[in-house]
Structures are given as structure tokens and as C-alpha cells.
Image: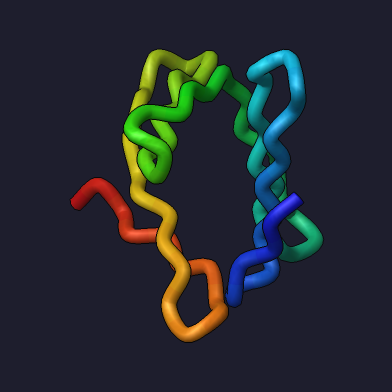
Length: 69
């Protein structure tokens, strides 16, 4: 599980499922399937039809997500 600075939480499961739970009392959860490409690119196809690819890198010992945009 990854916890982001806004307290949202991403989970990557061994069977390629993905979930992101938004922070706060009204949170909600987005679900989908993920694939790793090129060792540092994570692409997610959400159940609502939306998809995105983001890059994850280490910067001074900290994991940073560089969004697709």
C-alpha cells in the first residue's frame, strides 16, 4: 500500500487489481487493473473506463509519482 501526502491510499494486489481510497470521511474507492511497463511506469485501467499511466521514481530515498500529465 502507498499512502500519498493527501492521505489517499493506493493498493496494488498480486493478481493485478488496483484500488485507490480517497482521504476523508466521504472518501470513496476507485478500482481497476494495473500493469507495470518499463520497470517504472504503472498503467491503470479503471472499471469506469478511465485509464492513466504514471511513472514512479526514487528521489533522495523518497518514492515520487510523476503523473501522466
